[in-house]
Image (cartoon, rainbow, N blue to C red; front, side, top):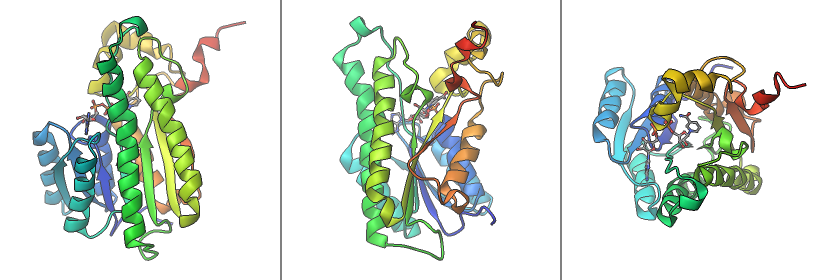
Length: 266
Ligand code: NAD
């Protein structure tokens, strides 16, 4: 079976940078029409959309805050108005507001939960409603729709100084698995990707220089990830090649979740 997303429409949230940007570009290369959501950086999102169009693909960029219900509904409307359907959601948007636990403000806590967990809920709910409205499209995909949540190794690994972030990603895990259990019989596939350390803006301080060298101690495979590592997995998860993969988290982490601290222990 060939990997092709021809005639499918993908929405990628938070796609003006980092993993979302790479995922949107890779989905377009695989043949999907892409809605590139951005929060505040219009320029890179517009530039990506026009680059995809120049290569013969289809893409638009749409502003929206995934923590706001009306914005999320607007994103789906744009996808359907412009391309006629929605087949793939990559709920990627996320942020960190780090603080030691005793110093963490309610604003920092809510700010992260609003985007990283409520945003995932709002996007998945809106996509599900759209999948049901449009029904199965067996000529296009074996699944009626595909939802990919961007989680993190920190849905599993506790992370001191980042309680809001780790709690949000732990929440994404049970959100994803519960939704998968609920809608699987409708042939809607729901999965997560859990990146480890991938070199993007969100973790610039940790992946470069001395901090970068220290980080490698946590990665058995011996290198920091690149956005393309995640994008490749997203394309596969969105395609029929992974048609029997449902309700699972794919860790793209060079082995970070293997408890590498135990390598030289005992
Ligand atoms: P990034 O900062 O480049 O991307 C995050 C994107 O989310 C940005 O484009 C930002 O504008 C967008 N965003 C923030 N708030 C938003 C909102 N309210 N509405 C819409 N979009 C919003 O960082 P990234 O590394 O590309 O992160 C992407 C996702 O991957 C996040 O969910 C992050 O938690 C996850 N992740 C990243 C890594 C890593 O190592 N880079 C590891 C694990 C998980």
